[in-house]
Length: 72
Image 1 (cartoon, rainbow, N blue to C red):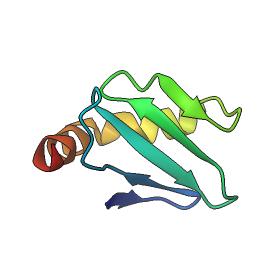
Image 2: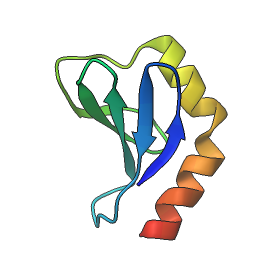
Image 3: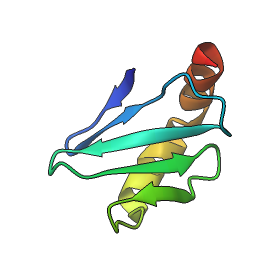
Image 4: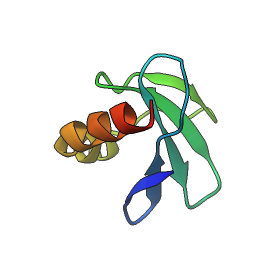
């Protein structure tokens, strides 16, 4: 489920019994999975979580964790 949309990527959370995380889908077709609330890269197409993206995620951490809790 898409929960946030930014200029160059969207953030998704899914029903999943793994540790809390979110999926980032980039407009260039890349994707990555990062842990919540630490935002450590779990998987990705060779991408590192850029500082500007991490800052956007940090600004929305409460919302993201709430959405994770809702679907899990």
